Image 1 (spheres, rainbow, N blue to C red):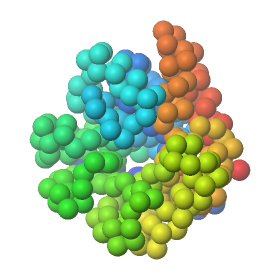
Image 2: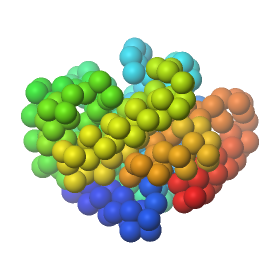
Image 3: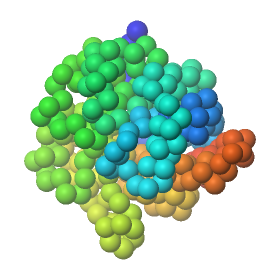
Image 4: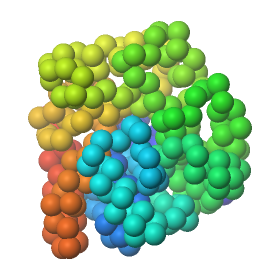
Length: 270
C-alpha cells in the first residue's frame, strides 16, 4: 500500500492556494496514554491543524525542550512501543483523512528495521517521516525505503546551516523542509524572528519544497507572524502544555487541544 506523500503535498499546496500557511501540530504518541494520544491527535486536526506530526518518544530526546521531554517520559513509563506510534498515526489518519507523519530519532528506526518501519508506517496510511538526527550523507537506505513505500522524508535545517549545506539537505528531502529556530532561547524574540525569516529565504533559494517553521510558537499572534514568511507553522510544546495542564482529566485536555488548534488556525489565516 502506497503512503500518503501525495496527500501531504496537496494539503500544503491547498493552504498556499488559499493564501495562507499550513498549521502543523505535534504530539508524542502514548501521551497521556496510547488511546488518549490517538484522541488528542484527532482533536488537533478537528480543531484546525492541516497536518500532524506524531512523535516517537525517546529516552534521550536531544532536540526537545523540557515540556516535550516530560510528555515523552510519561509515554515511556506507560510502556509505549513503536507499534503504538504507528497505530496512532494510522488511527488519526483514518479518523480525519489528514496527512500524519512520524517524527523520530534514527536509532529506533534502525533497531526496528528500516524496510519494516517504512512498510508498516505506509500501511497505516502515514505520510512520511521527519528524522532530525539523520545526516543526509547517511540517509540513502532510509530514502530508498521511503520512496518505495510512498513516504516523504523530511529533513531539518537550522540557522547555523550554510547555504551549500542547505542545498544538499533540500535536494535529498521530500514533502517539506523543517526549518528549526528557537524563540526566546537563542536571543530576543525580535532577533529570533528575523533569524527564522532569513533561514526560510535561504532555504527557498535552494528548493521548491514548502518550508515549515518550528519556532516555539504558542499563540495565534505568533502563528500569524511566522505565517507571513513561512509555508507552514509547526506547534508542539503548546499542545503538550494543554494536556499537561489537565493531567488526569482527558476530556478537559482534549477540549484545550481543540481550542488551541482553532486559535492557531485563525492565526495562520490572519
